[in-house]
Length: 536
Image (cartoon, rainbow, N blue to C red; front, side, top):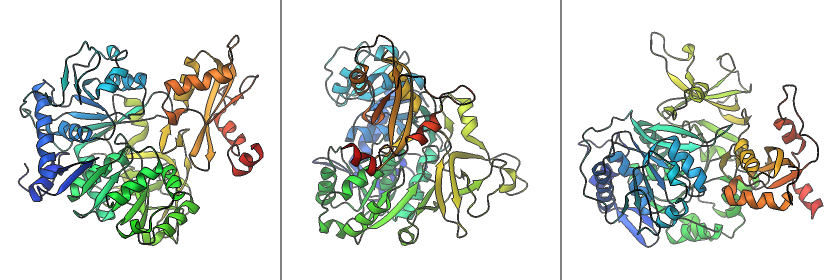
């Protein structure tokens, strides 16, 4: 355990709080609550077991679980073993899980017996996989050694401890083209992020944070790191309906909730008991713009609760936040840089934009990720040297900044406003979806000859996925068959909200490419209230 009250590796967030307040509640999942001492002991035991299974420094551990105690213990236990954890979205289908396992050469997979059974036909495609750890007893045969959580072998501490600059995690996020990309985060990225966010949210040991977002999201995992840094409690919630979230807020006397716009829209439409605002100290929005009407509804229902509006990207965790005292004055702003980070608005040539001039948001500081896993080309596109004129003179080594690909503007008072995305990513229900992932799934069905996916504005989803396609000759009833295929092979958030069938070739630009941007503009009003009303 560290000899000073500071943490520099991921698992030290738990160790330091356990040394200060061992009996304080740390983690609640259903009826079970672990105090910090128990959580630290379980994390240490799991980390030692990984080393005992022969896992080497820097090797990857895939975690394919819903939100439960084992998910948290495994994530932080990887740090104990000097390993790298790879949280896998529990909504992903077996083929997508297998891709991630192969892409980053996962050695050990932690999952449940039920999920293991779903993966039975795809794990054979993962040649680097050596062991499987199950939360219960296996229900299907496996060619690999399977270990139960309760029966993990006694292990040992790793021979070489990592440094704060070593890899700690790989978070997969959809790319603008093709397969998801693995964003590599160091221990320093995660710990610095915890300290920065806990600073401006004012987290303390008195807090109870509700983890409603997936832990495979940077914002979801942040609920763990910020809480453990502050010595607070995290309540894990796998919810089906928005009412489940409201019940948890009330039952657990939650003081902080971070969510994405689609969930806030659902919560605002529910009756919120007035007593919740007496203990819900703050709400925080991330993953897209919260509609002004929704924000006003929440503020009226929660008059004593402070709203924080945040902006960030997986490649740098968080970038900006708007403090509650500014929300009424400038509700469309994404605020200013978070503590211990700096944000610039730059032109193509690297020079700084003047007030209200649109430019690219560029972030520097300890939260900037280490790059994309095993992808030098994409890393070089997004992670580039900060222009020399923005750094103190005399420094010889370049500093890497992350170029967001998002266009923003800064007003005369320094507050930032989101303008648009430079790439073609579709931000729907808080998820970043690559249009080519949707197109690949449609092509794989054998039902379409040509297709294109794009996003259009939607009143509740942020953006809705629209797929335009013409049927393959000889395909039987593609209008009904394709939606069924996509639902079977894609996570729900990747399934198009609407499929438009056309008989002619899709429109192309001067370079011969399908004109995705033009199509998105042409169909921008597809889901407006007026359109919905006329369709009813």
